[in-house]
Image 1 (cartoon, rainbow over the protein chains, first blue to last red):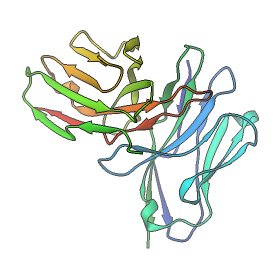
Image 2 (cartoon, rainbow over the protein chains, first blue to last red; image 1 turned 120 degrees about the vertical axis):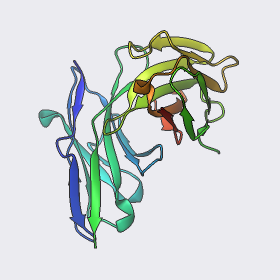
Image 3 (cartoon, one colour; image 1 turned 180 degrees about the vertical axis):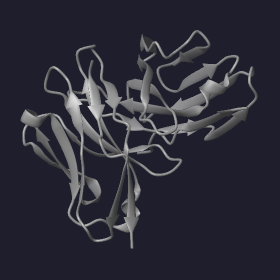
Image 4 (cartoon, rainbow over the protein chains, first blue to last red; image 1 turned 45 degrees about the vertical axis):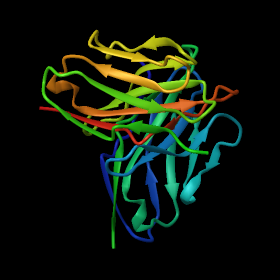
Length: 115
Length: 114
């Protein structure tokens, strides 16, 4: 079955340090991949997406992600974290073989930013 | 361009009561999705509409759940005879099917069943 794994439940990063959040997926074909961010009590905001082409994609708020087919990974990175980046981050894969775009999400990684 | 809106943002109800949530998608978006998110989990797909037609329902959507999108614009999600296990965040998303599709989410409705 298709699945998304985010192995880190919590990550703490010092403000100004770099960040990498891991995402691995299991899907039979090349998927569409997304990263969303959720602040407490809020909905999901799209950070970036990969459909095809360049495997390094740029998103909002200085985030980027790299699609690595050989590793079935789509890790999210940011070179310098700001306190306002503290939130929960969800990786998602779109299942396209059903005629519509059903998103399957990972369980999320909660990012804490220390001063 | 306004985003997806949901109403109410919070709902507290007693077990056995019926509740209804509303979602207003981004205008001209022809697809509308409902997801449910429980504590510590990612959102899970419930159902989706293409215009006014409900084309797919998850097994998570029991008979107590019903969703409508009567004119292909806003949508409602009703839960009858609520149970404590229905407590969750209910998220709505909309998209425009134009090649590759991107779903934009609303702020969610947080339901607490006592």
